[in-house]
Image 1 (tube, one colour):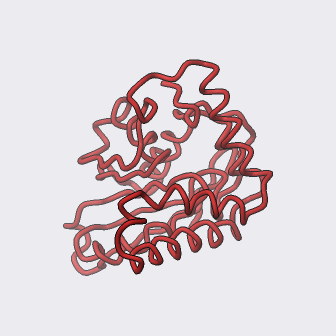
Image 2 (tube, helix red, strand yellow; image 1 turned 60 degrees about the horizontal axis):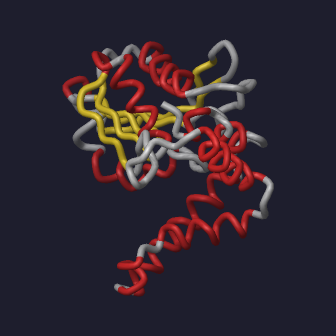
Image 3 (cartoon, one colour; image 1 turned 120 degrees about the horizontal axis):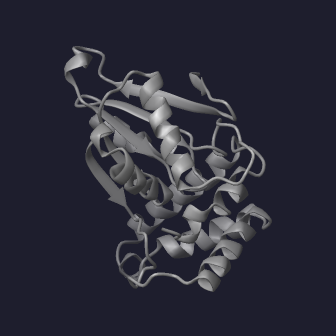
Length: 214
């Protein structure tokens, strides 16, 4: 398994794609959300492997990557991506990030836009879901609620994520589709949890990026 050793931590990464005439194919980076690892992108890789060279990695504190000493913020998450690009001699790549991965993409677009092509920002925002900036007290409460998941039983975390993942339209629609969503969430959380370093989820939750700080 390939790793990139940095000054304070190591990053686990993986490269996928069709090796035939691969030099002519563009690079695509996948950046995972909290509580997951690089396998959350398995379905996307399976569908895109003929068109891209794909780089995915476990963000610090997740999967097989190590947990550097806290605190760290959005610039640290972004610089992890740049370190991977430099080490692998990738001059420019498309980027797809989910949740905090999308926040990472926003930072990269602002501070290293010349290294990116198209940027896909999925389920992410620099504001709350109603478009309002969060004040300091709201950010603190949001951080406390998120960090508390590291202390709760995994079953409670999975249950809460299942409720959030089932939209009203999903609950009123196909039961088969709901069962598919349930299986996906359970596999994602329980599967990635087996390899996640102790304290990694909590430490990432405590970062300013997870409190919607701009």
